[in-house]
Image (cartoon, rainbow, N blue to C red; front, top):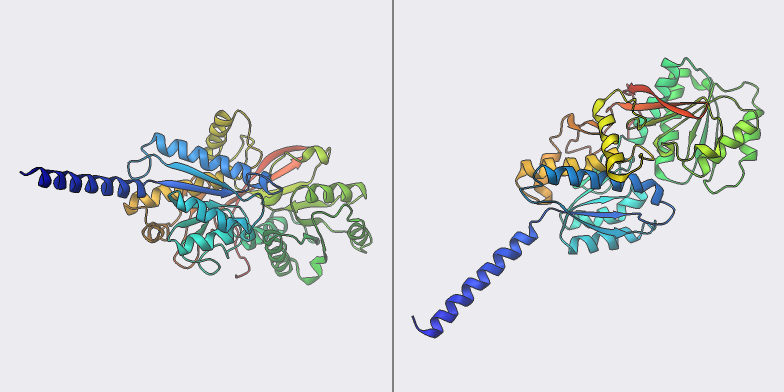
Length: 391
């Protein structure tokens, strides 16, 4: 072989080797975290991020995805929703084949739209069904239960299990989740207790220093409520509870997952008759042993107890992606989504999860209800909603 021909052959082989290496690099299982690593939404996203990273550890220890370890790339949206689109572009450019976005539709959607356009699967713990087929597109999946189903579940539990007949609704009118939660509770409550069973509805904003006027309207009712259904999150939610209790409102206070955890309990000393729906008890007493085992591993990895149950959602998003990619034999977004759409009570750590081509959020998956007495939290049990408003 002539020297010129030999050099040409070597060049062709090198090019082929480079192309093969590049193709392999393109197929690495890279997970993007476009989350609130700073800013006011950071405490909401923190345990979801931690749960996702724990899942990566566990999955990599078991062989990874398609025989390769999952790599993580991160982008901080600084609690600014519009930065989600920039974050999606950034992590996709770094090889992300799936992205976890913040736990609210308003925060997660901007980046999820970009992921959809790039054939990348988008996950979130948003409780708004719009983070799915109809709102974003067929590559967007929520690992949460729909807020509408959560509100209805709490109405059914309060009426059927506790025997309460009169309710008042207090809405923190700032994010999509709280609006869906209170709206569905009110609708289902009126079906159960009758229109007269809902004594009133009121609103406030999370940043309001005082809800004195709302408290006055509750204390001024001719008939006292058995419960106040509060749709809020810290710091505004605990502040609202403290002001209600200080005014002598001793009705039970029920709320949704956005007030999960006990990290805020110091601002409402001695709290009792408080009930929150969430994904599992982090207090070691969950009816599901898998949930208790998860929180033990969480504490071992991070050297502290989980603040909230949200880690279950982050873990399950990564768990779902890994299962689907391995079954599909591909990291291609459309192929992974085709498998995710076949999930029928798929056993994830968060619980049995069902997605269909039409609906990418859980509705009837059981949820935990946590009770608080004298500032101490404990599991009441797991419950499934019977009926909820359509969305």
